[in-house]
Length: 162
Image 1 (tube, rainbow, N blue to C red):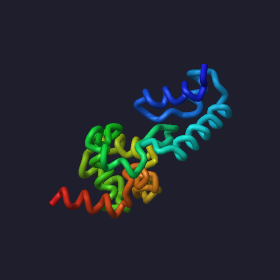
Image 2 (cartoon, rainbow, N blue to C red):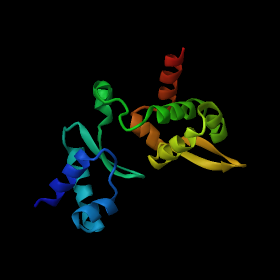
Image 3 (tube, one colour):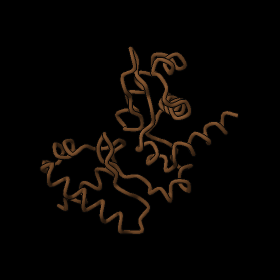
């Protein structure tokens, strides 16, 4: 069986990023061999005229639409991996950053703690201790995920709110 094709198939059907450890456990392939296969897949996709790329996030590996195609296909599955609550938290952080976690909790309620935790796991936001709360900001992964600078995203959000 073609291991690289097996990994590609797993990444394609998974609804969330897959870590080296998880792929290793599922298929019985060493993490080192998986890392090498991932590098091959990444290079092949980068050299091709295909519309997807392989990206490593803090959660693991996933296929994403290349930035130059995102605007064209975004209406087909807009932000499918982010819940409405997560999107609201992320929008607040993007517009008001740096912002205290306690402020977001005041706006959204206690569910915001979970949303923020998931956004941190996805690498879209980072936090730093700030007294008894946290100070939140978007990351470079946020810009890569949306294919736009944080300023462009901020303008889009502000225009929709008007």
